Amino acid sequence: MSSSTPVTAPCGSQERRASSGTSPDAQKPSASQANTCFGPTGPFIPRSSAVPFVPSSAGPVSHNQALGNAHLLSYSRDPVFRSAHQPGRSIISSRAMSQQLHATLQRWNFLTLAQNDPALEQDFRLPRVLNQYHSLISLDDKPMRKEADSAGFSFRVIKGISNVDGMPYALRRFSHSHVMPTPELTLLARGAVDRWSQFTSHPHVTALRGTFVSADVGEAPALFFAYDYHAGSVSLREYHCDHGTHFVPAREADLWSYASQLCCVIKAVHGAGLAVGGAAALNPRRLIISPAVAAFSGSDVSHGNRLRLAALGILDVLHPDAIGAMGGRSLLVAQRDDFRAVGHLLAILACGSAQTFPDPISMAQKRCSASLYRLIVGLASDGIPDCTVFCQLLAPITFDALQVERMMNDCLQVELGRELENGRLLRLLIKLAFVNDQPDRDLHKDWAETGDRYIIKLFRDFVFHQHNNDGAPVLDWGHVFECLNKLEVGVAEKVLLLSRDEMSMLVASYGDIKHCIQAAYSDLMKDSMCLNSKVQTTWQCGQ
Image (cartoon, rainbow, N blue to C red):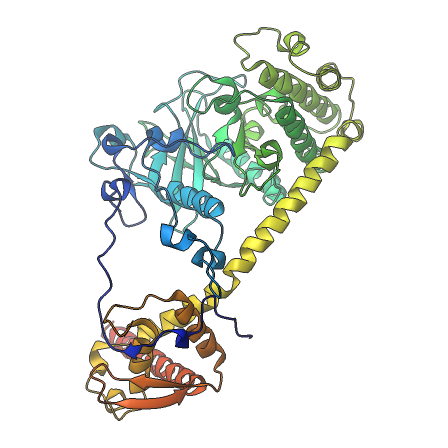
């Protein structure tokens, strides 16, 4: 391990004395935070106290516009940390990830942990627990989709947190009037999970993780499919076809990007001896678009947004021939249907709505360039027979997308480098918090003013509780970073420690302090394990 240089002027740049003190006035919570209550696993969603949220230009940011354009916890740095650079000093934000990336991840985390407010009557239709999933919340704009799609079935999408691994999942429930969960159908669904398990790590596939039957939602048993949940994603129909909250007209750059991403996933599926499912799977309702993780100057947003197949495995149960499960000619026909479906999909996105234009391919000629229209016609009319030809036509845009992806990787690598030191410093802070001010240790001889562990208390005051000559608390982050970095390494530099009443004075090196903290934490772990072992033994004897 290597030490890190301080980010501000050395701690000796200001004259300090180690003494206790209180922080300045606590920062008042914002209106959005004050109106947000938190449950066991995340924040509830008080729709009545919603604060409008304007999505960024980087693409879709939420499901149901964060449940009704509501209360996403916005993030902004303290203005004091954005002040102009001073000689020998740097801003705190240089030690952490960028504001844009932080805000994006914060939005996703908020959506992942979001729950419906149980006080709202309309939320009672969802149970508290569904199979192994809890913290349920609907991802649909409407409580139940009434209309059936081209495959002839309707569905409801619910987000839930698994009590097995603690991860969020998107649960697709199929109306029992369309899908009766018979034993044979359940067996087919389990086979679909096994069949598509090879694509769980594919970047353009929403991984299918499991299936189950439950009657907890609705009045009759229904079949559920559990997929990975991608926070902030919306369907292509909602994003490009429905003139609602999320509507964004598809540009030609978007269409080329979608074509290259669809080519990527179709090539992988066809290479595995399967088919995606034609128009039933490759339509705006069955594809979701996820916003880019990070954007940077000069990047094209269309290359950052990720397109994913969101309903793999469904056709295995309803129409096995659509994925080529029968083999032979059925597979060839199903794979040709995939190319035709991509052509129709691109034409629909170019027009903006399939209902407005009954013949979207003809209308696409007026809205696309000649090269993109040739691609659409070639796909829709079987002029592109396989993925080889499809890839050749997309070669120029593919290299552009590859360039952007590598630029984004470089950007994220820089962000990761900023957070590299913070993880180990957090572990060190947690150890300090565990060993400091243990209630049952106050009378222990090792924690008395003559004990070895007393130095840990003094070091905490030296790092966090200093005051200047005027009695004002010193909030020097650079001093904290410098001290923790030296402590983590255990350098030989010595530091003068004073008690709060300034009656005791100790001189110790960072290496000595590190040894004291490690010894105290080890003793704490031994005591915890010993007591837990005694309790378990007593319980077993009682049984």
